[in-house]
Structure formats: C-alpha cells, structure tokens
Length: 361
Ligand SMILES: Cc1cc2nc3c(=O)[nH]c(=O)nc-3n(C[C@H](O)[C@H](O)[C@H](O)COP(=O)(O)O)c2cc1C
Image (cartoon, rainbow, N blue to C red; front, side):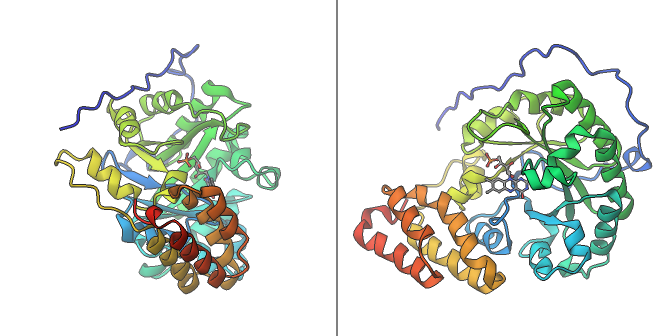
C-alpha cells in the first residue's frame, strides 16, 4: 500500500494568546447544543455563487457525493420579499437533510425573519442547516453591511448569530475569513463570540478578506481556531488532494474540510478523496467520461434552473471544468462564447471529436 508522508500544517507561533480574554455572555443555546451533523473528517461542498445551485449539487451527488452541501449565497431580504428566483436559490434538493442554505443579511431582524420562514417550510423544501455569510468581500455586499463587513463589527456579527439561533432549530454555521481590521487575535475572539452565540460549526477560509486567491491560504490559522474553539471547525481553501486532507486532519483538532473550486474541476472529487482516505485498499481508478459529464451538467441546468440562470451557470462551471483537457484555453473560450446551451453541447462534442484521447480521465 502507498505510504503517504503528509506535510503537516503546524500553526506558526502566534504573538499573543487569546485564552482568558473576556467574551460576551454565552447564549442559552450554547450550554446544551452538542449536535453532530456529519462525522469527523467529513468533506463538505463550499458555497459558490452561480455554481452550487441544485443542478451542480445534483451532479456532485450523482458522481460520488459530498458529506454536506451548501447552496450559493441567497439574500435574506430578497427571500422575504418573495423575489422571482428565490425558490431556486433556496431549493435544498437533492439532499435536503445534508444541505445548508447560505444567507447574507443586512440586519439581524431580516435574518431572524428569514430563518423563521424557512423553519416553517414543508420537509422537502426545508434545508438541514443555515449558514451565515461572513466572508464575501464583494464591494456591494460589504457596503451594505453584509458578508465580510461583519468581521469588522463583532457585536453585530454576534447579534446575527443570536437572531438566527433564536429562530432556527436546525444546523447553524457561519463561514468567515480572517479580518484584515481585527487581525488574527481579533478574528479568534470574534469566532469564540460567534460560537458562544449558538453556532453548531464554523467554516474558516483562512485568507484575509482583502486577499485575492493568488495569496496562499493560511491553514495554520484554521488549526489555531480549531484548537481554541469548542465547536467543530471546518477548514476551507486550496484543498484538492488526499495528502492535504490527511495533513489538515492529522492533529485531530480540525473537524472536517470544505472544498470549492477543486470540486468544480472534478465533480467526482468527493468519491475519489473518500476512496483515497479510507483504510480499505484503493479500488482501481475508474476513468471519468469528461464529455458525458459535461453534457449531463447542461441537461441538469436546463431541467432544474430558471431559464436566465442556465447559460451563466454552465459558463461558470465550464470555466473550471475545462482544466480536465489538454487544450483547456481553447475549450474554455469556445464554451464561454457559445451563444446557447445547444451551441455549448456542440462545442463540447466537437472538442472530443478532435481530441478523442482527452475524453476519459
Ligand atoms: C465562483 C465563486 C463563488 C463563490 N461564492 C461564494 C458564496 O456564495 N459564499 C461564500 O461563502 N463563499 C463563496 N466563495 C468562496 C468559496 O466558498 C471558498 O471559500 C473559496 O473558493 C476557497 O475555497 P477553494 O479553494 O476550495 O475554492 C466563492 C468562490 C468562488 C470561486
């Protein structure tokens, strides 16, 4: 059997300890909520706007299954106002019992009302969890006090969690980044306050909210948080191999892992990683039919999403998925510029007619 020598992400010595610093009083929930929604070492699908809609989650489910899914970010206010596509944003299929809807909200009141409304949905339309977006750094999101703006306003972030907790009996999580304003120490304090306000688990994408993807993610910070918090911490960012998963989980402190872009490149990634991480000897690699999977995604988008979302989601998914072939730029360009879904299907088919050796991976 292959021996792996995982590169360990050992947290760098941090300048100050946050132990013993005063925290806001814990809400009543934190004293008795110890729910477990997925096992240790679970692999979760990250929320991605325009991508992790019902069609993409169905594709992942068909090709091997994540342990937990997150929808793309939805607006609590638009949901309450009955926006045209809100039922598509909030659709928890195909795995409602293992899916969180992610909300961005302008006020704790709006988040509370959205949580309350969602909790009254019939079973098949009700997700298992709600995740609060505290990481989106898009200017229009931050300017309205949502997403990463909450990292810089710990009192308000805590109010958001408390408001959601009071109105939502299912899994409650938040997805954060490192606050450039609060620094590492301040972000740890914030995370502790959020946990005390009633989160069941916390996802950390350990880049500063001001950093782009070009900078490496700081998993050392995610490990520090996992040590400091009493709720499960989920690390996210740049994870794509079994070796990276092993090294992040090796200390036993990190509860689970969340994967985004790598799962768009390889929608079968969760099955591959689960197989490589299991103690059972690996089965021979089953080749994936890159053409059939691409065509299947177009069909799922057509069948499951509002018409105005269909082309855009295919473009976003194929932007990453094109990396599976030798002439990725060429395929990406022709797919992104295809005027219709039928034209996208034709481009995909033509590529594999021209380069048949790329079809199976
Ligand atoms: C296209 C795209 C859309 C994203 N949309 C969201 C979102 O709606 N909510 C969120 O919390 N994070 C969002 N993110 C961030 C991802 O969830 C994740 O934190 C980030 O991509 C790092 O993980 P990865 O390296 O595994 O992709 C998005 C990222 C990408 C690339």
